Image: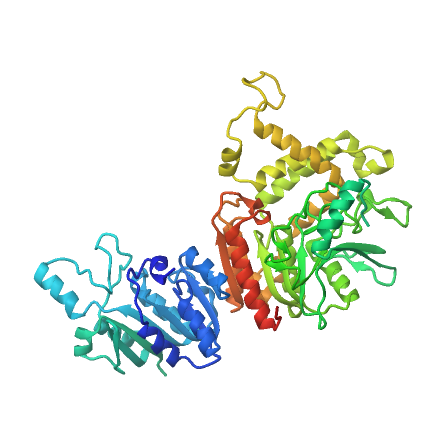
Length: 214
Length: 395
């Protein structure tokens, strides 16, 4: 079972998971981690195994939750839009939101909640500013369907798509400091620190690591 | 201790019991060790009857406490001495089952107020020389758990690797975690709630009124009068049994099918299969259960409200807990719906507890926890395996 079919957000299986490599490398061994939208627990299981983290997960689909619990992970059924508020402040060292933010009803509130309950936030999402997306809209006059986006305009759960630049601006507004970032293009990935205009054109997706300012 | 008078049942039971290394045990607590009840009454002396399955390991770290439901008993994995039927949780507890008796030492005690050997209303009150009847003190879920803690103390067992139970058994699991947080490594409350709902109290009241309306009940002193309020108890069981099922399952199993007839009788025989089924459930129940025990134990469930016991905030019951929780509910359970389980999960999240929450998709209603639900068994196996690794329990 791939996380794809579970969250309904990512339609295509992707290997290797360069975003997972980046996240695994970023997370300090033995830390407390919450993976929001953890699917069938693939990343969480890896973090528990490789980094010895105290890992928890939240997943919208019950199928994904049950698969995660069966593999021995601590995962609950929950919705990023409504259920993060239960957690106390600074409950985790890292909170991960993997390929989920574009499917939330209120990304700004979700980001604020994440930064309240976690010291560091790691967010990955498809980049709507990618040249292929821009070109499709420009030349075909149709809503883009790319490997990173999938779905038709009428059946997509991705209701809040954004570009790297949009996301960076929201982080500024929310007083979130971008500590590091990874631009992914297909199977290639590059560390970008802070994304520039060229990254916004070439990255099909990105992973941001952030923390509260001050 | 309960013994059976039928040799063929005893023989089959012995054979089945051997596979799970079943032992029937009792422990009696004398005047120096009274059970201090929530009602501030001291119950003394008292006895706890319990079954054990499997073997206790050298450092006593492999104990699984199985807490039974309202009409359950200690015979979770070995045949019932009265009915001869297999243990009520044989699909969960046994060799190679999720609670593997080749690996864990399972203790399943009959609750205080019960009628299978643990002190309850049908036992003799030492002060009067007569059966307790209604002079038995009111008991609570916390009292049941307090008695179990005394039992474990007596057995020299400090820590429980896992406390597990469904329905009222789940209430006991939650109470264990709240009252003795340091003693429970992992907990699996299934199809349960941190407080009994108004609707559930209402159904219990119907059952109690049915018992008390039976003239043979004699204000609870039927044992002295040599009578038996079997009809009232059967009606109570019939009403309760409906709440354990779902409309979908009832329809699938019985529909409007007629029982042994081609047309309706225009009378009040059991025309429909569902009527016949419920009558059978009622009539067999009275052979193995005591009417006054039913009154006392339903009351204990009604009184259960873990939040109220902790300043009105459920999260306070679990503050600082290091127990690993796996909360489980069933989609078609309307007696203890998923929303009840979610309240527990929300409270556990509020204290950043280690919690998993699994909802099993089934149409079998509340009773699903007793049935062969592969997804329930698989997820619990995964949870227990992971907990066992953390606890350093190797196979």
